[in-house]
Image (tube, rainbow, N blue to C red):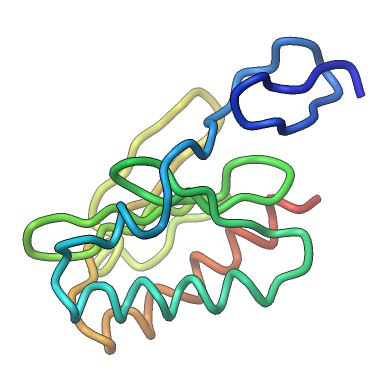
Length: 134
């Protein structure tokens, strides 16, 4: 270990490596959110929790999914739960309707508001999480 973040304690092999501290907490993130969106979020939480080496990091306004690096995130919006997934290939454009490029990385975004939307989006989130472990 070359460096450990003084805020979150996460260990890194490169000194000073940039990262997101999970300094928020789950209770604060979910407080006051619509029950239907919390239910969708808890489904994602359970799925990510089953992948060995993957974790959820709670920030103040969103939760990050990661393995060895960022895989995606969930953010509560007014009308939906926005999912971001870092993928190597584009997912269906009718569901993931927004993209953001960060150099060689592309994050695809889907706004899910129903269990049917989540059923379609979750495999792509899981694919991103699994890819972040290698």
